[in-house]
Length: 274
Image (cartoon, rainbow, N blue to C red; front, side):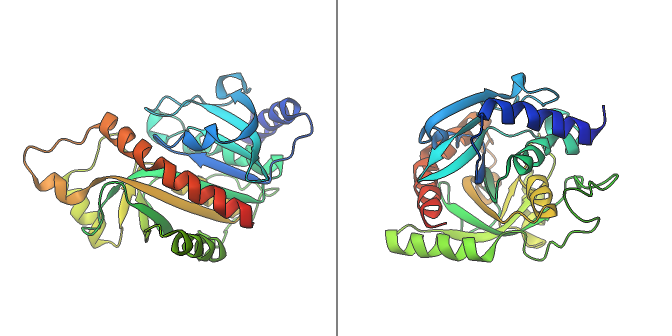
């Protein structure tokens, strides 16, 4: 079966399960950030394992469900856990959920992740608006272009929507919420970064590093879907200089979970104003 056939088969299955429900906003919830899904009203849960041709999420803190319903008065479909390249899936397959959400009719995409802070001014628990990114993963648009979704060479001048960023900053000022704003770099993982890699990422202009997000954003922008992105800083570069420091996956999920309430609040307030 071709990739385009897989996309349509999966989308047709989800559409039938939604039974006429049409999501306006797609949301991708990263490691430890699934709390937002608990806020969705009248939720319909669709496990990835039930969707034909769909990859299954195996990462820590990723439950592996689509959850459709209403949030802040908007119809949404949320990915409770994403698909990562490091899980062994081809990059096109890891971005299949975004293609499916496009066919379901989403007009905005919100993405979140847990990330390491390469910027020395960042602290564990900070929220960072992603203003731009550096993609060190394979590009998901490699191969035959999917003409029904977008052009061969899509523009990436503004991968993250400036109007949505301004709205988030306005809400944060009103509510007294401190936000960082920076550049996210995506690498393959699954090993965490060495101290030298942290220094390298900082030198090439990255403020935070993770193992996801950029392929999803590229696919969304291929279809001209406006994107808002946020990272939860769950570990920091300067800690790795301590010879006794160990980067621990469980600790990262716990740090993300602790900051998830603030991110959930911000996402809900942004949705209210769309």
